Image (cartoon, rainbow, N blue to C red; front, top):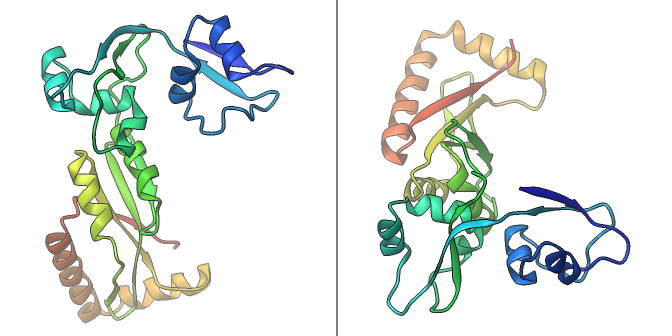
Length: 216
């Protein structure tokens, strides 16, 4: 892998030619949309393919993955632009493996709000283990304020990413949040209600866990 810093007068075509790559592939691998507006000082990642595959009629990501004994998630990591698409087309080139490994086996956590751009979410999910969704709020009476997160949870699971519920005390300031937590801790009935509400949401929506955020 090579990091190229854009210099005055350089274009996507001149940089691609310098490294023996196509301008189209260089743009794809760097997520460039407006390739005629490179900024001086901008960095581009130069990657070389070890194994690539030219799509044939009738191919799917699933049968290509099986042919090369890799996962569909690996294909999406190596070709992030495919997350925007419903189909692959005969003649296009898909990277199966890069000469330098782009990923390692680590645990990663991302964060998203319900209004996240779905295209951006789909491009990010292949690189995540968990996705924490912001944010549920609880009151000092044990009630939980619901959010519209069904689509994010469904998409996360379809990519094999575990959705995590973010839970915070309902307040407009840190001092008020401390008071909410304090009132909850001295009210046993509110604690039971909060636990029951949490269990209901976890089961009904399919969350894998809770990320509890508060100030004490």
